[in-house]
Amino acid sequence: MSIRLLCVSTADNTDKILEALVKNSDDIDLRLHFGNDMADFKASSLSRMDTRKGQRGHLMRDQHYAGDNYELLSSPVFRQSMERTVDQLFRYSDGYRYRSHNLKNLQDYLDYFYILSDMLAQKIKEENITHALFFNVPHLVCDTVLYDICKCLGIKTLVLTQSIFPGKYFSMEAVEDFGFFGGKKSKAKPMLIDQKENLDLFYMKDIGQAPDKGGKLSMRGWFNILAYILLKKPSMLLQPFHFFRLIKRARKIYSGFPSWRDPFSRFFHENEMAYFEHLMEFENQQIDIEQRFIYFPLQLQPEMTTSSLGGRYRDQLLAIEELSRILPDDVKIYVKENPKQGAYSRGPLFFHRLNRIPNVVFMPSFANTNTLIAHCEGVATITGTVGWEAVRKGKKAIVFGSTWYSSFPGVFRWSNAFKYSTFEKYRIDHSELEQSAGALLAACHDGVVERHYVKIDEGHDVDKNISTVVEILKALLSAKKSPIFRA
Image 1 (cartoon, rainbow, N blue to C red):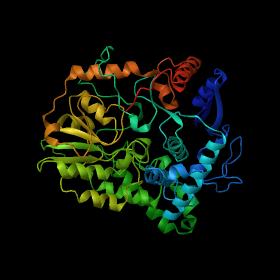
Image 2 (cartoon, rainbow, N blue to C red):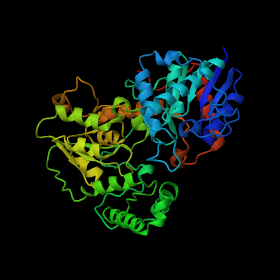
Image 3 (cartoon, rainbow, N blue to C red):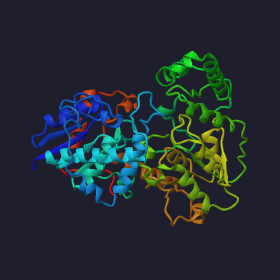
Image 4 (cartoon, rainbow, N blue to C red):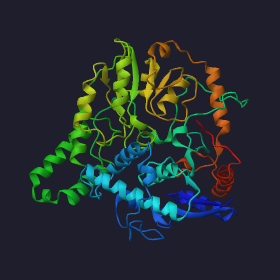
């Protein structure tokens, strides 16, 4: 049977894998490719709402209503799909991008969702797609809607995502399957886990854990402030008093945080300034490690780990509220902000809502994660790696979303049936944890499908990686090999 493939590949390394896959497979016909300029359609132009084209032009050119998104609109996942898409589109709005789309209100977002889903469904049906391949968990508008449509049409989907283990990646047929691993009885070699070892995550290299103060406005910060003024507030150049007042506020913010914290390195907006001024109020917060507490580090937003894998708990405060409701009176929730977070999803009402929860204590930015894990009753997270860090050290974890380690001993998936008394009494069998982790590691696919993870794959060979991944994809797409995660 010929496989008529739809693929979302937005990076050069996965484009090369895709090219080799099609070239070396007699039964795979690439019908639709959403990605960069060389793909059929440029995926980012659909989320940023610009006019950049792919090899087959722009998806919205000469478009018309066909009603081909009926299966999605009439499905049980419709509301969830629409809400998730709006959330992901919002990251490209005026408050978070210098060059933003022009969607202004809820109706604008809904209108665009209906138009986009209809156009994508048209293309899927025109090309008679049988299989869809995603090189990462869908989380960037175009891929999210494509995934939901494919599921509603009964099209076979294959989702890949890189693991934190060097040169290893995961696979699943449905995003909801992420973390459901049935290899607990595997005879694979256990993974040796040193309980005293702290994880060395490459994407957290620049994050400090010390209470030093006195940061200075960085060159990146200066550049982004000027970009904001030129693109959004050019009149401020004629108002030197307002300009210098803004710079004074920015310098005060930098001086109030540890030197490793660079508040405006990625983006500047007056909302960002208000956010960091509010955070500064917690920098002198005392940390009582003798208090009984659950450690809840907030995750970065917008991010795949929350917007897609978090489900309804991409609203992280909902998770904290639900957790608060079932905890004993003498157990606090120590909440720490993500050190890379900006104002996105962190408006004044976020902090007001957080402040309304009586047993929440907000941590300063320099609070040491390893110390908090060592003294907590357990950690709670949507999908964060902190849960894996915790169980490695004998601490239990509560997860609210879909994450790769959720089948490990000591990890409790949140549900209405969750009982804190059960959680409190549970003790992790370290040897059982090592066996479970070893079984998952043995089941992982060899290769790198996320370009950022090449840096931790020692001796990475590009050509070898391509041929290795291609052989695995051929087996997965033809159902000769089963995906790693299955609910």
